[in-house]
Image (cartoon, rainbow, N blue to C red; front, top):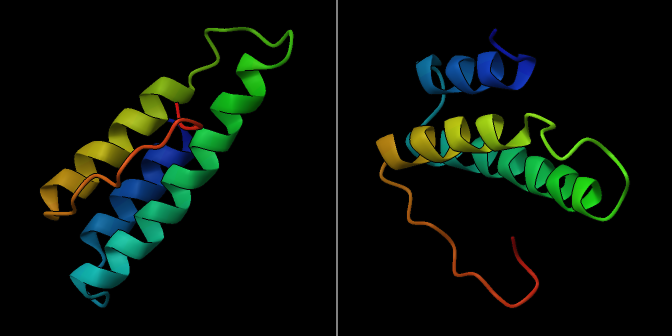
Length: 78
């Protein structure tokens, strides 16, 4: 089953009107949102198999395909 975020990621990647930088910026926004949801899930009694891993994987694959470098991770990141 394809999630809304996965469809949105695909839409951004295929959007010919956006520059690569714009696509990366939009994908980073989705990535940040999904990471926030992962943190919330890890800090609450939510189902640990919440599906955020799949969404995050799709965003990372799209960013990689656009040549985006993975941001540096600090102590407070997942």
